[in-house]
Length: 152
Image 1 (tube, rainbow, N blue to C red):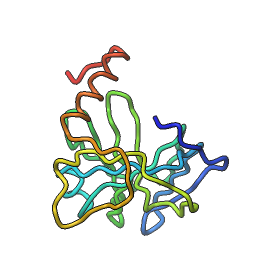
Image 2 (tube, one colour):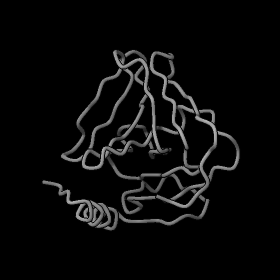
Image 3 (cartoon, rainbow, N blue to C red):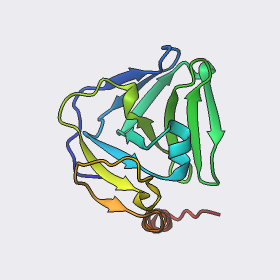
């Protein structure tokens, strides 16, 4: 995780209809951007996610979880359809859609990943680290190996 400052106060967001609320503690003051084809299909363009040290979710009865790959799940509100989070299963790390929250000014971009899958019809101009899909997978596998985990 980046050395970006963390917000001192918890940040609460919600889906479009309000059935699901999410409160993130010690939120990192940066957004991760994913350009992979799966995120594009899921949200219409890129995924912009925020993360913190902890999260509390209410409205569990409205949440639908979809296993989108061998290593990830994506959640959405079954009432309004708002996308809620991406969870990397080996580490249980969740990244919540930035648009669910009224974020304070000053957020930057930590990194852009799967830049090799980004469509030509949009561009994000803020400079940030940019990683291809193979680079992201290699980092994830190395991190999992250090924790004694594997993709198997």
